[in-house]
Amino acid sequence: MRSKDKISYFYDGDVGSVYFGPNHPMKPHRLCMTHHLVLAYGLHNKMEVYRPHKAYPVELAQFHSADYVEFLNRITPDTQHLFPSEMARYNLGEDCPVFDNLFEFCQIYAGGTIDAARRLNNQLCDIAINWAGGLHHAKKCAASGFCYINDLVLGILELLKYHARVLYIDIDVHHGDGVEEAFYFTDRVMTVSFHKYGDKFFPGTGDMKDTGERDGRFYSINVPLKDGIDDGIFTRLFKTIIAKVVETYSPGAIVLQCGADSLAGDRLGCFNLSIDGHAECVRFVKKFNLPLLVTGGGGYTKENVARCWALETGVLLDTELPNEIPDNDYIKYFGPDYSLKLPGGHIENLNSKSYIGTIKMQVMENLRCIQHAPGVQMQEVPPDFYIPDFDEDEQNPDERVDQHTQDKHIQRDDEYYEGDHDNDNHMDDA
Image (tube, rainbow, N blue to C red; front, side, top):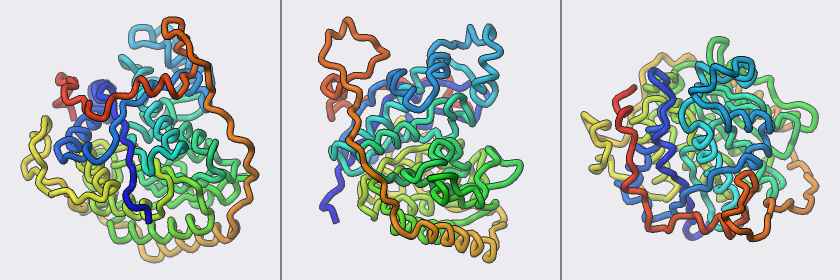
């Protein structure tokens, strides 16, 4: 066991002030609420807090097509009507609206995940947290499911520079389709997604029989679940599968997407998980003592999202949090009981014993097909595109910045953005 995990936490107050529009279920404001709970519980004193760099277009184009990145950078709410064919091609519109500061929002949440991966790669921390990340539906050339840039794929690509094998685990209620698709043909990333599966449930993918192709055959694992799954069944299944996956695949690093829409009472979800049940998955993954990158994801009942991710920050810090929520700027959202723990729900559980048994058997069968960790040939580590020191005035923002310059942009540990103004106009949506 490591004596004490060193934890890096990434947060930029600007992510919480973007607004997807009236009636849109995605409320980035939940990130401010999460951060203020982290502060109220004093968790910031136990980890390094960083403001992430804004990812450069060339970094985003490590996965996304350059024309898509360029369009996201250029489009604004006022000009979108001029580009109907591009809007359709890139799937922008209702689910993925164009709003003010859209590109900067993408740069910040993706920059956080890339920075998190780099700090892990350079052994500057054991666990890195970016609750703003986890936007797992975005595709190479298109937005999807409220996600524009797939920060998870970018973070995994970064980890692959130092690790032969990376394990991706997703506990969002929706299938992690964008990440699975990106790595569907390779054995260097194993993706494991636990999600609600059904014809009418977004994104409609994630069948048990989708297991990867070519070199990636059996390296995509899908755990399709039905409505109403509870803590007991979910955590038992999760632990059984993940323990076997880690033993069989022996990853060098793990990326854990903690979408909170799998909690009971979520606006878009249909599971019965309590916050304790959700957090138990995080606690279990932490026990493997592998470099761990933790992100947010979905979650549409924002006070519950904030509760969940604050509690899970505590889990990652081995810190038990009192159930009574301390006073903070958003305390009114946590009434009437002001407690941190959220009980499970009461949706009828449609996951029969035999159904869960079948899933377990099928996953174990697939894992037997790759019984021995694949022998990935490691090449020399590609550099983080370096450019030599330069005059900042002449800097081309499309070029990647070297580590020395990035470090100059990192906030000192004692700056916690207490004064960040939140977008109060939108506080009462939802």
